Length: 109
Image 1 (cartoon, rainbow, N blue to C red):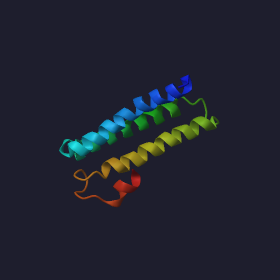
Image 2 (image 1 turned 60 degrees about the vertical axis):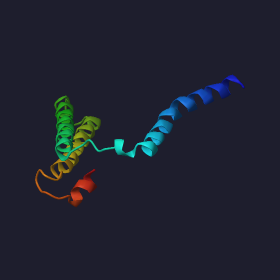
Image 3 (image 1 turned 90 degrees about the vertical axis):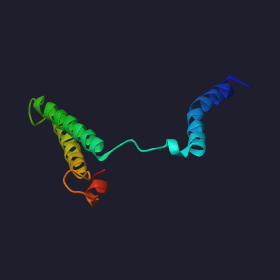
């Protein structure tokens, strides 16, 4: 066996072992696979991401010397778009503004 073949066999085993272990655990103990997230967790995690994207937008916009810096303008607009889409996604979480799942929750994700 050459060094190259041993290298590939080693990394295939190292990277494949977690996948095999996951498959065995899902097959042998499916009751261990319980969901851990709640609607409140989802709402606050998405809200935190939204605030981080809005802060990144503010930093990028504030650091521009002029509006002629086109790359920075587009970067700021991109962060603003991410913040807006994530805000719609977070506010659409059931139990916060309305009680059931609407289309904007699936579409905005």
